[in-house]
Structures are given as structure tokens and as C-alpha cells.
Figure 1 (cartoon, rainbow, N blue to C red):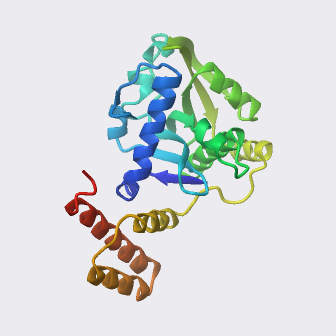
Figure 2: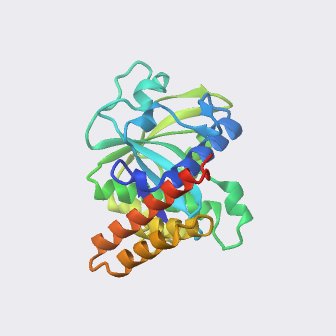
Length: 266
């Protein structure tokens, strides 16, 4: 399942984002040897400060098993400002309907350790379908993906071949990088889904994930009896989805404050 995290809801999913940054460090620094900055085991760059949209693949336990980052090309983006050698001196594409997809990666180790039938291939295809569907629903016409040759082969094998390439292939760390252009159409979405046997909605409701994270917090964090009773009362008396979401958000805020004052976040 795919969770979309953007500027509007990122405050709700700090733990998931943190795990995503750690996954990126393991993949792009340790495995691929790219020249990326890693601090405290997390790969975060200046483009993460520009309010991109993240599509995060989660397993049944709501653990991160894959991710990617999508950013508009009208402002700073990696192909224009980091991988400009790929462009061979040509100006970068800039359009409100052309977005850049980067930092696509899968946690192959975690998936292989699990025994729930999920495979690396299926997870990759689910994430690719998520990119195409998110783009299609957002009015994005084309997506540029900075990938290595291995990922380019995966795209082709998954019936998700790029419609074109931009610039040339350049050396990047232990591997090479190239810019693949994909047109966003219903046909592309259907091809990816058919190849992987994906059916139904692949996007998970953010409230469902937030509730699950809050429940997991209960195992390690307890409010005082008065605060716990108050939160339970607010949740149970909620009359609408928005009221329930607000009550759950209050509960999470109080738990965070309680952990901090108790020294649990030290």
C-alpha cells in the first residue's frame, strides 16, 4: 500500500519519514555508492526542504519498504541542479505539468525477511503504479526519473518503459545515471497493474495509518489516567470523521508531549 506524504500532512508522519530517510541512506550511499550527504544515518538533501510529495510503500505492519520523491520542475530540482551533466548543455524541462521523480528505492532486505508473500518485484511495481496514478490524478502529463541502468531495465521489464530519454548517461558513484521520460496515461497505469497483477486501490488512507501509529505508541507510552480518559471520551463522542481525526490528533500531540517531558525522546 502507498501512503502519500506532502506539505499538508507531513507533520503526522515524522516516524515514517525518518525511516524513509534511513532507507535512502542504506540504498544510495551504502549500496550504490552515490555522492550523497548522510548525517546520523539519514540521507536528506536540500530538495527535501522544498515540500515535495513522497510516495511511501508500506507493508502490512505499516513499516517502510519503499519510497520515492516527486518535485515540480518549475523550481529547483535534481536534473537541473545536480545531474546537469546528463543534459549535455541543453536547458532543463520546466513545466507545471512535468514533475521529477527521484530517490526511488526498495528495502529489499526487509521484504525478503518477511513471510507475507510480498516480493521485491511486486513492491516496485506497486510504487511505479502509485507514481503514475498520483501523477494522473494530479494533472501531471509527464514524469522525469533520474535512474541508474539497472532501474531502467526494471522499468522496461515491468511494461513501464520510458517513452523517451533526456541527455546522456553519466557516471555517478559506483554506477551511472540517466534521465528517463514517462508520459502519464491510463494505458501506462493499466500496463503496470496488469504486469504485476495489481487490483483495487493501492493508496492507503492517511487517517488509517495515523491511527495505527498511534496504537503502536500505546505499547510504549501511557498518558496519565485523567488525560487518557479525556482522550478516550473525545474520540468516542466524535460525531464526524473530522471530529474523530481532531481527537486522535490531540491524543498524538499529548503523547508526544508526555514522552518529551518524561525523557523518552532523549
